Image (cartoon, rainbow, N blue to C red; front, side, top):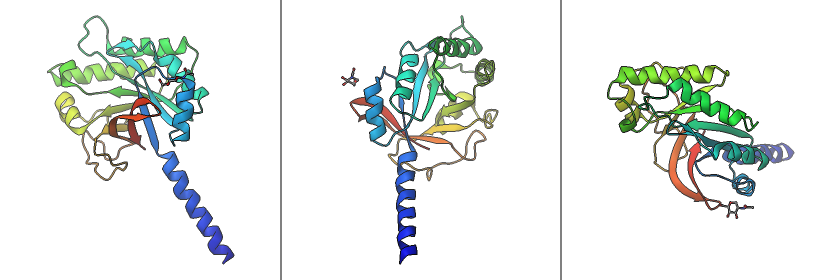
Length: 215
Ligand SMILES: *[C@@H]1O[C@H](CO)[C@@H](O)[C@H](O)[C@H]1NC(C)=O
């Protein structure tokens, strides 16, 4: 009997712990500390904040990162929306300027997620897109940041073709099936397993518009 009670407690805490630990949000608006407090009490402790907006450092990013830590998030990453067709700035330069803008604010973050989506923002030549991607990696490597890729199977195919040159980086894929699980995942781009899934877009949580993610 005593053993069964212990087993029950272990199981319940495992299930509870799992459901709390596997949800994340990503955010593109300026977000204050009380909003992060609220996200935390709703089971989110991992946030991915926009650091680069169409090739320019997001002016709201650094403060939101600081507020995320102050609001009790335990994992804070950034995502970078590049401008591959901006002739005046390279992939390297865009990522470098994002890092500098956050560093100037003296806040820490984990991984940089490079966004590969929106074929209209990319070249029609896949080898140019691959070169731009590698240039962004070089930008992230100047500071030893870990890098991941945000994309989807169809977006990757349109922009990068069958290239699998990014498969050594963790994959954050989107599929808006409202299902917080990897059961839908099919290999593409050389990735055989994902790290994060964005399963819902534009949900209101704590009066914030967020995308919901499972990891
Ligand atoms: C924080 O942001 C939320 C959502 O935008 C807003 O409702 C709230 O008033 C803000 N709180 C503070 C203390 O600024």
